[in-house]
Length: 189
Image (cartoon, rainbow, N blue to C red):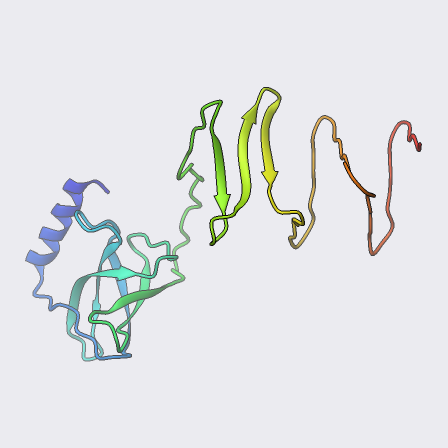
């Protein structure tokens, strides 16, 4: 929604009804509908509209918990924490209408020059991982002596060719089931 539409909608909403601002007592929980999902000036606030328990209408710009994805038309839960001056949006209810699945867009992008490295450090500033480019392609370098890639489900590695090089010491393969090695020719030693 562009800024012109946001301001138009706010003006119409305020002029067409005699709505009160939202006033919740500490711990009170209400459900409301999101009218505008982008504040024209203050990022992170959305315009909601609903009814108090006594039936009076309200409309207010509120902040939401950071992890929530909120769109106009969503029904949300609102609650006022006892140690915070205003209500917050703390949840999104499933809607009767199915929302279309949105195509994923690149949110943030970083371009590296040939002599630059992206480094990720731990909380003490020690390097954990570097991402850099080389003439042969990208290189991901882990800086700790014992690193692990751990995940649920299946891990699949696909490439035109795969090389594993244990520079010092042995290489171990372990499985709770069978180990299958398939190849046109299998060379051992």
